[in-house]
Amino acid sequence: MMVGCEIDYAELKQQTIASGFFDNYKNTRIVNSFLFNYSKIQDKVGAKLFRKFLYVEKGIDNEALPMKDILNILEKLQIIENVYEWDRVREIRNNLSHEYPYSIDERVENIELAMEGYEKLKKIYENIKKYCNLSKENK
Image 1 (cartoon, one colour):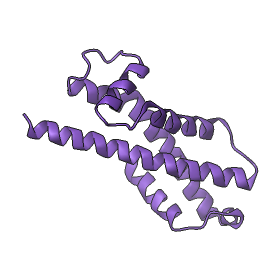
Image 2: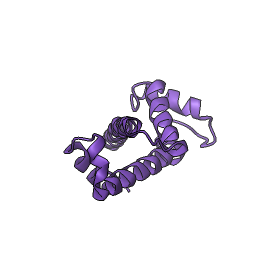
Image 3: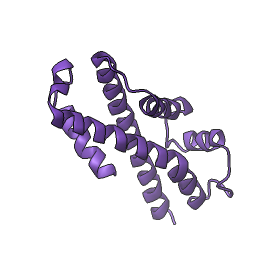
């Protein structure tokens, strides 16, 4: 999923996304694939990875902790910059899944927001990997 999203993201970064962009069906397929994978990655990171990461790293002793508490711990560990950062990534995902704008400008804006959200997700994922590597080195 992450690999597919990264491929689509790289292709979208190379293009100018404007009104004529959607005239090419290949571009529409890339966008749809990227948005689908972005949403799935955000879901998995928020619903599973954060809790599993904290549980394994002994940050929590119960995976049933409320998300607000999970985010506060992640912020203290510098996995996320702040709780707002994650709220923004989640908000982008929710907007994508609940509305399909017919306006080209809105579609372009949603794609740009999702690309911004994906960059944040990648940064968060890299922070988790760094933390785990440091943790292994210190054991």
